[in-house]
Length: 350
Ligand code: TXA
Ligand code: MG
Image (tube, rainbow, N blue to C red; front, side):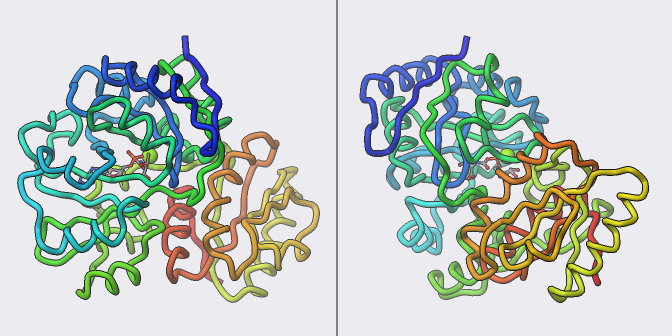
């Protein structure tokens, strides 16, 4: 039986939080909102509890989990060392949507890191996430609270749809502000390297750390072949709605023309078409289920809406979804990373 607790940031129910904290401390699983996406938490120091996460999500066991704490000093027992550059990253971006990879200490079970010698740690800023982690009194491992392969949940209804009956409790606590998972930054090598783009961008990191920041070269590969991303999770098909997804990249009017042309071909075959676009381009499309991510000049809003839109298409009968590509600057990088993965690398340049 899954218990559901409804609350919002301004009305955090202390006794419900305490109850959820006890579930976590005793080896159970609780889903809760964070500023990025909903997470499915379990006690990071308890191997059996961790197995509960993998079972509930149907997650491949070689995909490591991020550990969540509420204060910088909480990471001391969890890591082998804190490099100088990490202090700057922590001071600038924590609490917030940045996961930092450290060399792990012996306290972290192998199940959490999927056998890797590094551990990803994040301090979330969301008041409900912080309250429940504090109530648990232990570090909390938490992947996104979706069934593996589906888009990460950004509203409580997504979590209920995926995990009802599979976890001990769900805290339904409103919508997630960022809407994309945290940036994963590896600080265990010579040069900081982004393994997963997110709300904290390369530009922001380079400015704050006053050093060059690399991106895992695997992020630029546009097919599944010959790629071994350093973040195991980045190799799986992900974020996929039921319908096939195709991303079209290019100048705005050429993209619309190409999508309209392909749409006609699909309609002739008796297929239903969905389109993901921006407010500015919505009116260019007809005879399709059209969903806008938001205004073209508001990348944060587009990021916040993307997963919700991908899931909404599962409530329609479209067979194929054409998505307009966005410019890969700032958060656009993360939006495109998720869109291209959702498409299974079906990308067309016009
Ligand atoms: O925003 C987020 O990060 C959310 C919220 C709940 O905090 N969590 C999340 O977790 O997105 P998950 O498990 O869905 O994604 C974690 C990603 C995966 O791609 C995983 O492979 C990578 O981080 N990762 C975790 N630990 C790692 C490690 N030690 N080395 C390399 N990649 C790691
Ligand atoms: Mg995930």
